[in-house]
Image 1 (cartoon, rainbow, N blue to C red):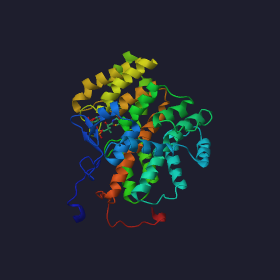
Image 2 (cartoon, protein in one colour; image 1 turned 90 degrees about the horizontal axis):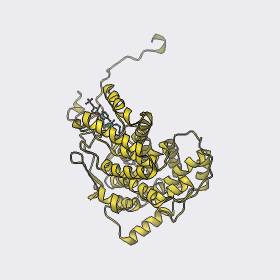
Image 3 (cartoon, rainbow, N blue to C red; image 1 turned 180 degrees about the vertical axis):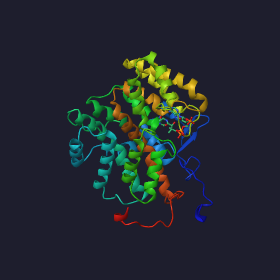
Amino acid sequence: MSEATTTMTMDKGLDHTIIGESTKSFIDGQKGVLEYVGIDIDSLARNSTFEETCFLLWNDRLPTPDELEAYTRRIRSHYDLSDAMWDAVRAVPHGAPPMHVLQAMVAMLAFEDPACDDQSRDAEEEKAIRILAKTPAIIANFDRVRKGLEIVRPDAGDDIATSFLRMLNGAAPGEASAKALDVCLILHADHGINASTFATMVVVGTESDMYSAVTGAIGTLRGPLHGGANERVMHMLQEIDGLDAVEDFVLGRLSRKEKVPGFGHRVYKAIDPRATYLKTFAESIATETGNLDLFHMSRRIEEIMESQVGAKGIHPNVDFYSATTYYSLGLAIDLFTPIFAMSRNAGWAAHALERLEDNRLIRPRCQYTGPHGAAYIPASER
Ligand SMILES: CC(C)(COP(=O)(O)OP(=O)(O)OC[C@H]1O[C@@H](n2cnc3c(N)ncnc32)[C@H](O)[C@@H]1OP(=O)(O)O)[C@@H](O)C(=O)NCCC(=O)NCCS
């Protein structure tokens, strides 16, 4: 080991590294607790709205009614896309993965922002508002365009959840569906320094801009070890041939040392509190929409996983029951992760804005294990 690295420790997944202070979310992985700015996630899911939760995460306190009204108005004033952006939504190849579409379109928002390189808190927050406000229109309308349907522009009278569902389906959603999506957005809004949030911090840490940070985060969230797991859960449920086939399927996967999507977490060794909430929620939505078979299969998978690997601290995570919830809401499977991104915009911006108040370039090192003093061999001699 060289002199420069003798005081360093190898921490490949950064599991044991604290990269700064944060007031945003608190996680107790042993007890299964999640709080946003000190407020329990269950209490927020029952009482708050997604917009109010965003304000909380960005400002470290709940808004007064007037502040919430002004904040909501500000978001809605940015719902619509420019003509160039609508043209771009229409021009995207229909077979493109929606997460890649979202990533490209968020990058495009930078073209239209003359304050892109202004790193003041106000300018960065304005960029975050634009991303938060425009993401639903991008996702919902890409889905419409690929189905050969006309664009539906956002309605500034709607909250984010209602607006998304109205654009997606071309009709006002029922109150229960809009509420269900709003609660899902609250539950996914923040989660400490997860991989995609870390990506935003790495990007803003170089004094790059919020659009670049969020495009990096979207690419990170896409992976099946992170946000992409909810889509994998749904594909797994579709692959299993009914309730009686669940046991063999799960045991087979475990015996082949294959992971079961929607289980396990780097931080939670007790049940993820978001999964507890979503489980009840998934059951009621599945009942209402005639998808109880899916819910029963999910319960059975959970039972078998609990008996096999529960003692190792592997329990359902947020993605497990959100899959049944989204499917019951009639959402296309490849929109599950984009909806996660729609929500996590709140946390990405909260941590990026916080980091900028006390920034330090993030620049870890690795342990070099290659040769030294190697000769350069000309191509003709190799
Ligand atoms: C999320 C995740 C990456 C965190 O894992 P981690 O802290 O890196 O832990 P590891 O992947 O090293 O797993 C530790 C042990 O638990 C097992 N394990 C972890 N998740 C598992 C799962 N979903 N199914 C079966 N076994 C699992 C591993 O095989 C490993 O077993 P071993 O000690 O016998 O080798 C991991 O649990 C996972 O891949 N889950 C599935 C994907 C998913 O749902 N992601 C969304 C997270 S919110």
